[in-house]
Image (cartoon, rainbow, N blue to C red):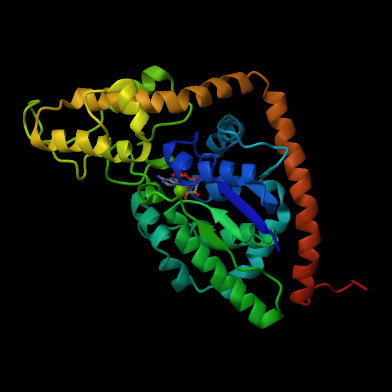
Amino acid sequence: MKDIILTGDRPTGHLHLGHYVGSLKNRVRLQNEGNYDKMYVFIADSQALTDNYDNPDKIRENLREIVLDYLAVGIDPKKVTIFVQSMIPELTEYTFYFMNLVTVNRLMRNPTVKNEVIQKKMGESIPSGFLNYPVSQAADITLFNTTIIPAGADQEPMIEQTNEIVRKFNSLYGKTLNECRILLPDNKICHRLPGLDGNEKMSKSLGNCIYLSDSEEELHRKIMSMYTDPNHIKVDDPGKIEGNIVFTYLDVFAKDEDFSKYLNEYKNLDDLKDKYRHGGVGDVKIKNFLFNILNDELTPIREKRIELSKDMAYIDQVLKEGTAKARIVAKENMKKFKKALRINYFDE
Ligand code: ATP
Ligand code: MG
Protein backbone atom coordinates (compact mmCIF):
# COMPACT_ATOMS: atom_id res chain seq x y z
CA MET A 1 0.00 0.00 0.00
CA LYS A 2 1.32 3.45 -0.89
CA ASP A 3 1.50 6.13 1.77
CA ILE A 4 -1.15 8.66 2.64
CA ILE A 5 0.53 11.90 3.70
CA LEU A 6 -1.13 14.58 5.80
CA THR A 7 -0.09 17.71 7.73
CA GLY A 8 -1.75 20.85 8.98
CA ASP A 9 -0.89 24.33 10.17
CA ARG A 10 -2.75 26.60 12.54
CA PRO A 11 -3.91 29.89 10.99
CA THR A 12 -2.56 31.92 13.90
CA GLY A 13 -0.20 33.93 11.68
CA HIS A 14 1.85 33.67 8.52
CA LEU A 15 4.19 30.71 8.05
CA HIS A 16 7.79 31.11 9.18
CA LEU A 17 11.25 29.61 8.75
CA GLY A 18 10.46 26.91 11.34
CA HIS A 19 7.61 25.68 9.17
CA TYR A 20 9.80 25.92 6.12
CA VAL A 21 12.66 23.74 7.37
CA GLY A 22 10.58 21.63 9.78
CA SER A 23 7.81 20.58 7.46
CA LEU A 24 7.19 22.53 4.22
CA LYS A 25 10.42 21.45 2.51
CA ASN A 26 9.66 17.79 3.19
CA ARG A 27 6.11 18.26 1.95
CA VAL A 28 7.28 19.76 -1.34
CA ARG A 29 9.89 17.01 -1.75
CA LEU A 30 7.32 14.26 -1.09
CA GLN A 31 4.84 15.93 -3.43
CA ASN A 32 7.40 16.10 -6.23
CA GLU A 33 8.63 12.54 -5.72
CA GLY A 34 5.02 11.52 -6.24
CA ASN A 35 5.41 8.19 -4.48
CA TYR A 36 2.17 8.35 -2.49
CA ASP A 37 -1.45 7.40 -2.75
CA LYS A 38 -2.89 10.71 -1.48
CA MET A 39 -1.46 13.84 0.02
CA TYR A 40 -3.38 16.34 2.16
CA VAL A 41 -2.45 19.66 3.69
CA PHE A 42 -5.03 21.37 5.85
CA ILE A 43 -5.55 24.56 7.75
CA ALA A 44 -6.25 23.74 11.38
CA ASP A 45 -8.68 26.57 12.11
CA SER A 46 -10.78 24.59 14.64
CA GLN A 47 -7.65 23.69 16.55
CA ALA A 48 -6.42 27.30 16.44
CA LEU A 49 -9.70 28.34 18.07
CA THR A 50 -8.99 26.14 21.10
CA ASP A 51 -6.54 28.74 22.39
CA ASN A 52 -7.77 31.72 20.36
CA TYR A 53 -11.51 31.36 20.98
CA ASP A 54 -11.57 35.01 22.09
CA ASN A 55 -10.11 36.22 18.80
CA PRO A 56 -11.85 34.48 15.91
CA ASP A 57 -11.00 37.32 13.54
CA LYS A 58 -7.31 36.48 13.85
CA ILE A 59 -8.00 32.94 12.64
CA ARG A 60 -10.27 34.15 9.85
CA GLU A 61 -7.73 36.70 8.63
CA ASN A 62 -4.92 34.17 8.47
CA LEU A 63 -6.73 31.36 6.66
CA ARG A 64 -5.96 32.57 3.15
CA GLU A 65 -2.52 33.86 4.15
CA ILE A 66 -1.47 30.30 4.92
CA VAL A 67 -2.63 29.14 1.50
CA LEU A 68 -0.54 31.91 -0.08
CA ASP A 69 2.46 30.60 1.87
CA TYR A 70 1.75 27.03 0.73
CA LEU A 71 1.56 27.91 -2.93
CA ALA A 72 4.53 30.29 -2.70
CA VAL A 73 6.83 27.50 -1.42
CA GLY A 74 5.67 25.18 -4.17
CA ILE A 75 2.79 23.13 -2.84
CA ASP A 76 0.77 22.29 -5.92
CA PRO A 77 -3.02 22.05 -5.48
CA LYS A 78 -3.16 19.69 -8.47
CA LYS A 79 -1.13 17.16 -6.52
CA VAL A 80 -2.11 17.97 -2.94
CA THR A 81 -5.61 18.35 -1.50
CA ILE A 82 -5.69 21.57 0.54
CA PHE A 83 -8.69 21.78 2.87
CA VAL A 84 -10.18 23.68 5.81
CA GLN A 85 -10.49 21.66 9.03
CA SER A 86 -13.73 23.25 10.29
CA MET A 87 -15.48 22.44 7.02
CA ILE A 88 -15.11 18.68 7.58
CA PRO A 89 -17.68 17.93 10.30
CA GLU A 90 -16.64 14.26 10.38
CA LEU A 91 -13.48 15.42 12.16
CA THR A 92 -15.56 16.69 15.06
CA GLU A 93 -17.47 13.40 15.18
CA TYR A 94 -14.28 11.33 15.29
CA THR A 95 -12.94 13.58 18.04
CA PHE A 96 -16.06 13.08 20.13
CA TYR A 97 -15.78 9.29 20.10
CA PHE A 98 -12.01 9.31 20.58
CA MET A 99 -12.44 11.33 23.78
CA ASN A 100 -13.78 8.15 25.42
CA LEU A 101 -10.46 6.43 24.77
CA VAL A 102 -8.16 8.97 26.47
CA THR A 103 -7.95 9.92 30.12
CA VAL A 104 -7.65 13.51 31.32
CA ASN A 105 -4.42 12.52 33.09
CA ARG A 106 -2.93 11.24 29.87
CA LEU A 107 -3.72 14.55 28.17
CA MET A 108 -2.20 16.51 31.05
CA ARG A 109 1.03 14.52 30.64
CA ASN A 110 1.45 15.42 26.95
CA PRO A 111 4.79 17.32 26.92
CA THR A 112 3.83 19.67 24.05
CA VAL A 113 0.54 20.58 25.75
CA LYS A 114 2.32 21.05 29.09
CA ASN A 115 4.82 23.39 27.49
CA GLU A 116 2.14 25.39 25.70
CA VAL A 117 0.08 25.74 28.89
CA ILE A 118 3.11 27.41 30.49
CA GLN A 119 3.94 29.57 27.45
CA LYS A 120 0.36 30.74 27.12
CA LYS A 121 0.14 31.36 30.87
CA MET A 122 -3.04 29.31 31.20
CA GLY A 123 -2.32 28.32 34.79
CA GLU A 124 -5.21 26.32 36.20
CA SER A 125 -7.63 27.71 33.60
CA ILE A 126 -6.99 25.34 30.73
CA PRO A 127 -9.95 25.28 28.34
CA SER A 128 -11.06 21.66 27.98
CA GLY A 129 -11.06 22.14 24.21
CA PHE A 130 -7.38 23.06 24.35
CA LEU A 131 -6.48 20.10 26.54
CA ASN A 132 -8.28 17.95 24.05
CA TYR A 133 -6.55 19.20 20.92
CA PRO A 134 -4.23 16.17 20.68
CA VAL A 135 -7.40 14.06 20.43
CA SER A 136 -8.69 16.24 17.62
CA GLN A 137 -5.31 15.75 15.93
CA ALA A 138 -5.84 11.99 16.19
CA ALA A 139 -9.09 12.59 14.30
CA ASP A 140 -7.35 14.68 11.61
CA ILE A 141 -4.82 11.92 11.10
CA THR A 142 -7.04 8.84 11.19
CA LEU A 143 -10.06 10.13 9.28
CA PHE A 144 -7.88 10.22 6.18
CA ASN A 145 -6.05 6.93 6.95
CA THR A 146 -2.77 8.83 7.18
CA THR A 147 0.48 6.86 7.31
CA ILE A 148 3.10 9.66 7.16
CA ILE A 149 3.19 13.10 8.77
CA PRO A 150 5.99 15.47 7.74
CA ALA A 151 6.27 17.68 10.82
CA GLY A 152 8.53 19.14 13.49
CA ALA A 153 9.50 17.47 16.78
CA ASP A 154 6.70 19.21 18.73
CA GLN A 155 4.37 16.82 16.91
CA GLU A 156 6.00 13.63 18.21
CA PRO A 157 3.85 13.44 21.37
CA MET A 158 0.73 14.00 19.23
CA ILE A 159 1.59 11.11 16.97
CA GLU A 160 2.34 8.87 19.92
CA GLN A 161 -1.04 9.84 21.39
CA THR A 162 -2.74 9.14 18.06
CA ASN A 163 -1.23 5.68 17.78
CA GLU A 164 -2.36 4.87 21.34
CA ILE A 165 -5.91 5.84 20.37
CA VAL A 166 -5.68 3.80 17.16
CA ARG A 167 -4.55 0.70 19.05
CA LYS A 168 -7.28 1.07 21.65
CA PHE A 169 -9.95 1.70 19.03
CA ASN A 170 -8.87 -1.30 16.95
CA SER A 171 -8.70 -3.62 19.94
CA LEU A 172 -12.16 -2.59 21.15
CA TYR A 173 -14.02 -2.28 17.87
CA GLY A 174 -12.02 -4.33 15.35
CA LYS A 175 -9.21 -3.27 12.99
CA THR A 176 -10.42 -0.05 11.43
CA LEU A 177 -7.73 2.62 11.75
CA ASN A 178 -4.09 2.91 10.60
CA GLU A 179 -1.09 3.71 12.73
CA CYS A 180 1.10 6.53 11.42
CA ARG A 181 4.65 7.81 11.71
CA ILE A 182 6.27 11.21 11.75
CA LEU A 183 8.76 12.28 9.09
CA LEU A 184 11.27 14.65 10.67
CA PRO A 185 13.81 16.68 8.67
CA ASP A 186 17.32 15.19 8.28
CA ASN A 187 19.03 18.09 10.05
CA LYS A 188 18.42 17.81 13.81
CA ILE A 189 18.32 21.61 14.26
CA CYS A 190 15.30 21.71 11.94
CA HIS A 191 13.31 19.38 14.18
CA ARG A 192 12.70 22.43 16.36
CA LEU A 193 14.18 25.54 14.80
CA PRO A 194 14.80 28.10 17.56
CA GLY A 195 13.28 31.55 17.33
CA LEU A 196 15.16 34.82 16.85
CA ASP A 197 15.52 35.06 20.63
CA GLY A 198 17.40 31.75 20.59
CA ASN A 199 15.46 30.33 23.52
CA GLU A 200 12.17 28.82 22.44
CA LYS A 201 11.17 27.20 19.19
CA MET A 202 10.27 29.67 16.48
CA SER A 203 6.53 29.98 16.92
CA LYS A 204 3.82 32.30 15.61
CA SER A 205 2.40 32.74 19.08
CA LEU A 206 5.74 33.78 20.56
CA GLY A 207 6.50 36.56 18.06
CA ASN A 208 10.09 35.36 17.51
CA CYS A 209 9.77 34.53 13.83
CA ILE A 210 11.21 35.27 10.45
CA TYR A 211 8.16 34.96 8.22
CA LEU A 212 8.35 33.71 4.66
CA SER A 213 6.42 36.86 3.73
CA ASP A 214 8.78 39.32 5.48
CA SER A 215 10.10 42.08 3.22
CA GLU A 216 13.82 42.33 2.54
CA GLU A 217 14.03 45.30 4.98
CA GLU A 218 12.19 43.37 7.69
CA LEU A 219 14.44 40.36 7.21
CA HIS A 220 17.51 42.59 7.50
CA ARG A 221 16.18 44.32 10.60
CA LYS A 222 15.38 41.03 12.33
CA ILE A 223 18.77 39.50 11.57
CA MET A 224 20.60 42.60 12.77
CA SER A 225 18.68 42.45 16.07
CA MET A 226 19.70 38.83 16.79
CA TYR A 227 21.80 38.04 19.85
CA THR A 228 25.16 36.44 19.22
CA ASP A 229 27.62 35.93 22.06
CA PRO A 230 27.17 38.60 24.75
CA ASN A 231 30.91 38.45 25.56
CA HIS A 232 31.94 39.04 21.96
CA ILE A 233 32.09 42.81 22.21
CA LYS A 234 35.10 43.81 20.13
CA VAL A 235 35.88 42.20 16.79
CA ASP A 236 39.07 40.71 18.19
CA ASP A 237 37.38 39.10 21.20
CA PRO A 238 37.10 35.31 21.00
CA GLY A 239 33.49 34.33 20.23
CA LYS A 240 31.27 31.42 21.21
CA ILE A 241 29.47 29.33 18.62
CA GLU A 242 27.34 27.26 21.01
CA GLY A 243 24.07 29.05 21.73
CA ASN A 244 24.92 31.71 19.12
CA ILE A 245 21.74 31.79 17.12
CA VAL A 246 23.34 33.32 14.01
CA PHE A 247 25.57 30.25 13.76
CA THR A 248 22.61 27.96 14.47
CA TYR A 249 20.88 29.42 11.40
CA LEU A 250 24.09 29.27 9.38
CA ASP A 251 24.32 25.58 10.27
CA VAL A 252 20.93 25.13 8.64
CA PHE A 253 21.17 27.43 5.64
CA ALA A 254 24.83 28.06 4.66
CA LYS A 255 26.17 26.11 1.70
CA ASP A 256 29.81 26.01 0.57
CA GLU A 257 29.00 28.04 -2.55
CA ASP A 258 27.65 30.87 -0.36
CA PHE A 259 31.21 31.44 0.84
CA SER A 260 32.61 32.00 -2.63
CA LYS A 261 29.64 34.26 -3.37
CA TYR A 262 29.50 36.39 -0.21
CA LEU A 263 32.41 35.67 2.13
CA ASN A 264 35.35 34.40 0.13
CA GLU A 265 37.97 35.09 2.79
CA TYR A 266 36.69 31.93 4.52
CA LYS A 267 36.68 28.47 2.97
CA ASN A 268 33.53 27.13 4.55
CA LEU A 269 31.45 27.19 7.73
CA ASP A 270 34.01 25.23 9.77
CA ASP A 271 36.67 27.73 8.79
CA LEU A 272 34.43 30.69 9.70
CA LYS A 273 33.56 29.11 13.07
CA ASP A 274 37.19 28.46 13.79
CA LYS A 275 38.18 32.09 13.09
CA TYR A 276 35.19 33.40 15.07
CA ARG A 277 36.22 31.29 18.06
CA HIS A 278 39.74 32.68 17.97
CA GLY A 279 38.60 36.30 17.54
CA GLY A 280 38.78 38.63 14.57
CA VAL A 281 35.35 38.11 13.01
CA GLY A 282 32.75 40.83 13.62
CA ASP A 283 29.08 40.08 14.34
CA VAL A 284 27.89 42.43 11.63
CA LYS A 285 29.87 40.42 9.12
CA ILE A 286 28.26 37.09 10.08
CA LYS A 287 24.84 38.71 10.25
CA ASN A 288 25.20 40.22 6.79
CA PHE A 289 26.30 36.82 5.52
CA LEU A 290 23.22 35.18 7.02
CA PHE A 291 21.04 37.94 5.57
CA ASN A 292 22.39 37.35 2.05
CA ILE A 293 21.85 33.61 2.29
CA LEU A 294 18.32 33.87 3.65
CA ASN A 295 17.42 36.63 1.25
CA ASP A 296 18.49 34.41 -1.69
CA GLU A 297 16.31 31.61 -0.34
CA LEU A 298 13.28 33.76 0.50
CA THR A 299 13.20 36.23 -2.41
CA PRO A 300 11.59 33.84 -4.93
CA ILE A 301 9.03 32.77 -2.29
CA ARG A 302 8.26 36.39 -1.39
CA GLU A 303 7.87 37.39 -5.03
CA LYS A 304 5.64 34.44 -5.87
CA ARG A 305 3.52 35.20 -2.82
CA ILE A 306 2.99 38.80 -3.91
CA GLU A 307 2.01 37.61 -7.39
CA LEU A 308 -0.46 35.05 -5.97
CA SER A 309 -2.02 37.61 -3.63
CA LYS A 310 -3.30 39.55 -6.64
CA ASP A 311 -5.87 36.84 -7.28
CA MET A 312 -7.51 35.91 -3.99
CA ALA A 313 -10.49 34.42 -5.85
CA TYR A 314 -8.10 31.69 -7.02
CA ILE A 315 -7.02 31.06 -3.42
CA ASP A 316 -10.67 30.63 -2.42
CA GLN A 317 -11.19 28.27 -5.32
CA VAL A 318 -8.23 26.12 -4.21
CA LEU A 319 -9.69 25.91 -0.70
CA LYS A 320 -13.23 25.18 -1.84
CA GLU A 321 -12.21 22.50 -4.32
CA GLY A 322 -9.76 20.87 -1.90
CA THR A 323 -12.32 20.85 0.91
CA ALA A 324 -14.98 19.32 -1.34
CA LYS A 325 -12.55 16.56 -2.35
CA ALA A 326 -11.53 15.86 1.25
CA ARG A 327 -15.18 15.77 2.32
CA ILE A 328 -15.92 12.93 -0.08
CA VAL A 329 -13.18 10.80 1.52
CA ALA A 330 -14.31 11.86 5.01
CA LYS A 331 -17.91 10.77 4.41
CA GLU A 332 -16.81 7.44 3.00
CA ASN A 333 -14.47 6.67 5.91
CA MET A 334 -17.06 7.84 8.44
CA LYS A 335 -19.29 4.96 7.35
CA LYS A 336 -16.66 2.38 8.32
CA PHE A 337 -16.02 4.20 11.58
CA LYS A 338 -19.69 4.17 12.57
CA LYS A 339 -20.00 0.53 11.59
CA ALA A 340 -17.08 -0.36 13.87
CA LEU A 341 -18.70 1.59 16.71
CA ARG A 342 -22.02 -0.21 16.09
CA ILE A 343 -23.86 3.09 15.56
CA ASN A 344 -24.73 2.50 11.90
CA TYR A 345 -28.31 1.66 12.84
CA PHE A 346 -30.06 1.88 9.51
CA ASP A 347 -27.40 0.58 7.13
CA GLU A 348 -28.38 -2.54 5.21
P1 ATP B 1 1.40 28.34 17.11
O1 ATP B 1 2.34 29.22 17.87
O2 ATP B 1 0.07 28.94 16.81
O3 ATP B 1 1.29 26.94 17.68
P2 ATP B 1 3.43 27.41 15.32
O4 ATP B 1 4.40 28.44 14.89
O5 ATP B 1 3.83 26.46 16.41
O6 ATP B 1 2.09 28.17 15.67
P3 ATP B 1 1.97 25.35 13.98
O7 ATP B 1 0.90 25.73 13.03
O8 ATP B 1 1.59 24.92 15.36
O9 ATP B 1 3.02 26.56 14.05
O10 ATP B 1 2.88 24.19 13.35
C1 ATP B 1 2.67 23.67 12.05
C2 ATP B 1 3.75 22.70 11.65
O11 ATP B 1 5.03 23.34 11.60
C3 ATP B 1 3.93 21.52 12.60
O12 ATP B 1 4.21 20.39 11.80
C4 ATP B 1 5.12 21.88 13.43
O13 ATP B 1 5.83 20.74 13.89
C5 ATP B 1 5.97 22.66 12.43
N1 ATP B 1 6.77 23.69 13.12
C6 ATP B 1 6.29 24.80 13.73
N2 ATP B 1 7.30 25.50 14.29
C7 ATP B 1 8.44 24.81 14.03
C8 ATP B 1 9.82 25.02 14.35
N3 ATP B 1 10.21 26.09 15.02
N4 ATP B 1 10.73 24.10 13.91
C9 ATP B 1 10.33 23.01 13.20
N5 ATP B 1 9.05 22.75 12.87
C10 ATP B 1 8.11 23.64 13.28
MG1 MG C 1 2.36 25.14 17.29
